[in-house]
Length: 340
Ligand SMILES: Nc1nc2c(ncn2[C@@H]2O[C@H](COP(=O)(O)OP(=O)(O)OP(=O)(O)O)[C@@H](O)[C@H]2O)c(=O)[nH]1
Ligand SMILES: [Mg+2]
Image 1 (tube, rainbow, N blue to C red):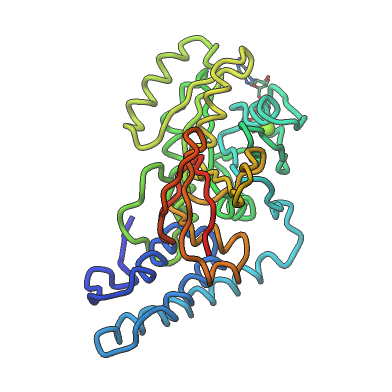
Image 2 (image 1 turned 135 degrees about the horizontal axis):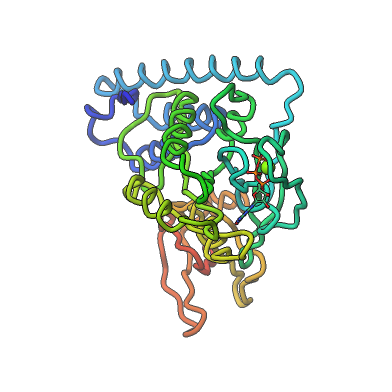
């Protein structure tokens, strides 16, 4: 894939405010066109205007108009009925993608309260099935999709993949075609300008591309020669994604899968605490990893965030805290008392 640097990152003028850099980082992780438009607008507002930033300013403007065009195009396309327009719910939305009969619907059934049709022949699922998976104190939405196959792949379905927060690529360990299928799925994703990743994407992506967290699930580990095929795929994938072996039929490794799905979303749970009161551990705020105390404050109340000085980061066991700045990046499990 060709990567260009639409923001001219290679020759960034010095002295950009930290807030600018932080926002730019968000652009890299943005999922939807709408999100990207919002972030580019913010970047334009944040950019100090002087001779040294002329080029960057023009780049941003160009980028914004291209994104707006794309948004318009998307609106035109989705004006008709779209069964793949799925309302998000919970801490994140994860789609299940894979070849026919690999066990996508079975996985949805095993991990959630949903009861989709499951059958021992291909193309059982024709519309998305939804379910909520509970992991500790968060709910994660799983979307079981119709299969990927070598014929026509529905662009509406692929749009749903683009809008999601992460994907599971599902394979059948009883199937000899497993490596070909893996390559084929990556090809389909590339055609839709989706760059699947687990670790960070280092380079800037072209404006039309999105990065989407992905991992691999090898189902039907109870089948003959499953272990060999799993090993083969592991070697081929070469640590690019985690590969989780499971068997729905035997209930093997499903708890591990749940934890990994939580990790896939790359979110942190933080607990907000009021002065003198204990935090509510049942109701975490769920934010993207890398979110700061300021992001949390904005989530709670826009006005509030303007006056924010920082926060007390509590150690609830020792009943002590330390003061952290507005730009402190919160970790999973942090107990935060905002200070204004
Ligand atoms: N041996 C074995 N069979 C499984 C396992 N999981 C699912 N199956 C069977 O595989 C067949 C297909 O399962 P589905 O869940 O319908 O597969 P799917 O990927 O949703 O299929 P499509 O909707 O056609 O894409 C069914 O007969 C399941 O019972 C497993 O872990 N081991
Ligand atoms: Mg199915």
